[in-house]
Image 1 (cartoon, rainbow, N blue to C red):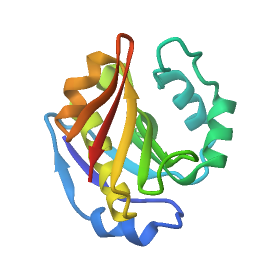
Image 2: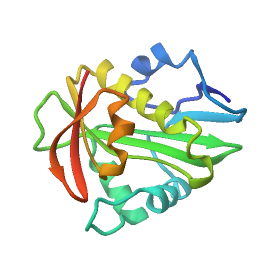
Image 3: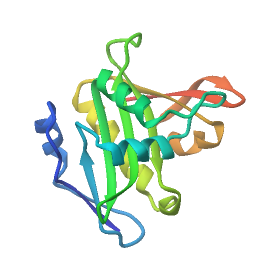
Image 4: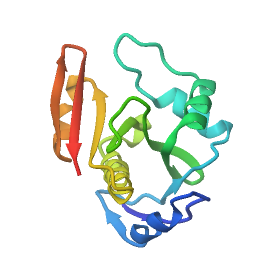
Length: 174
């Protein structure tokens, strides 16, 4: 599949994004997909986030309204949506979170719809999100995930720094 990163909507960081949206990323199959930066998510996007976001173990699933509020409060937030034929099929959500060090960016979610998993799309979203954080001069990205995802994130330079059992914390230095 060939994914062209283009057609980004309004963003305070549009010039940064333009630097690396010209290139294409090849993965395993043909798929007519579009990666888009979303600054004002509509109901369709918020519903997709609520349905596909994996909550932290022991925590309740977030609703569409929860996501709307979270995005509204995000500082230097990034919501990347991946679409096929106009329908959302994946997302990457990150932001600078109050309480984190100035140079630390938080990955709040990465998901691909079930029928699109294992096609390299999560990797495309994560790589793009990490590039964005680096362009904004953040020095590290942190995330929480289930232990089953540890090997996936290690491929992108993340290492486990705390946690065991149902949830671990991981960090990548940019």
